[in-house]
Length: 628
Image (tube, rainbow, N blue to C red; front, side, top):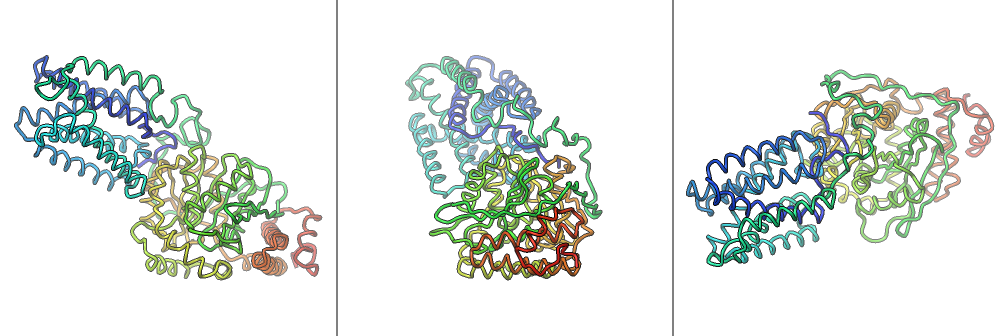
């Protein structure tokens, strides 16, 4: 399956104007259907309406984006044809409303079940491909047929009358609103429940106004009611430019869309053998390596976020968010590679790496608030959000709130929706840890010690329970999902299911990597991230998990000379002391020393004055080249 493009949803956002227009179309469909079948021969009328409905719907299904007039024309035709289907079932076939209503309900549920199984989501924000749009319209047709039958059932069979039936369904919609406001109903369930219930609302009130007094109505007539509602629909769509439009048709192209540099034509997106790993592309070398790390504090919510920054210039800023209990040092090997493309900001969130904890309840959403605050304070324009483990939940939440962000990178996203228990997650994490290098285990032990068991225990249930797949459909950014081959916590089946929920996602697996793949295989992960931002990663669809290989995989110490290794050891001690004591100056020195050692190993030139200042900051006994 070819992944859909960001910002190209083919149906409108469910805004207030959407619901108003929706009710108008259901009322118009009810009135116009009754008018046509009573004024003309019912058989050819139904056949002609079916043909016109098919033509309009076919045009809508071919649309590659939301087009207001076409969309609402199709909805209006569904209103007319859906009413005819319900009426034909009752009048021509003699099926009671008490029977046809549950039959239509079963058909609707069947559409939802198969749609959910095939696509992984029923969210209308994720209708970004032709196949998803076909499922959407199958559900719409079923809802109109069932809603119309339910309205007639309430009015005729239950004897509530058209007005009483309409008020009943208004009350049910209000219950849905309350359920959504109190989080009893999720956004997807609330939308489709309201979509079904608004069908009989429009139909019931249209019938109440149109039918004669002998049938409990006002007797205005179906023809006049149809005309008035049709004019109201035209005004609603015309004046609003289309309710809830995600993006105007003439909006500028974003990364990944056809016509944007780096995007491959759709016909070039061919399947790839999952078992054939490729080398990671090499990053461009800069003139000199920027190894000076600056540490700042951004006040947030009674505490602060510690920001470790490297680099000041480049195409796009990167914002790196680590996982549960983990310090930004997990990104120490990844950040220098990214810095060649753009400035890097690695965050230590409240409660982690010695940073003061939040007071009160802690949630993933609260951490997302903190990241938003950092982005705002630093004045970052369209940052590339990079998250690892629990950090993927945080950056996904941030991206879902900001449709203007265009790139998202998720490394080892958690938690598998089929294993959302603390015990199962712990077992899977332990299995993955067996494949981590010793330096990662050192980072984990020290980071968890700084975090403390009490805080870790408070945040862990929030991470395990967070439904990242429910926020994913709201993300308009192009998303790259990376996992390590040996990551038991993030199995292949999970990231494939997760990727199907995002409007646009590509998958990559790093051979030999485990959960902390961005550390041990930093070269490959950095190359993938930069290629993704540049629009150079082939999009082969979420069913294809292309694998890459990082031949440089090893621990820091095994890659370094004796002098470089000694500098790394002292850098680590300085970082640990700085985090434990809250001494940002010592922390800066330690992080900069580590970056210097990595630059030396890579053969990247560093100005002598900068080198000497960094080396002296972590100890004067180290020789000037750190090479031994």
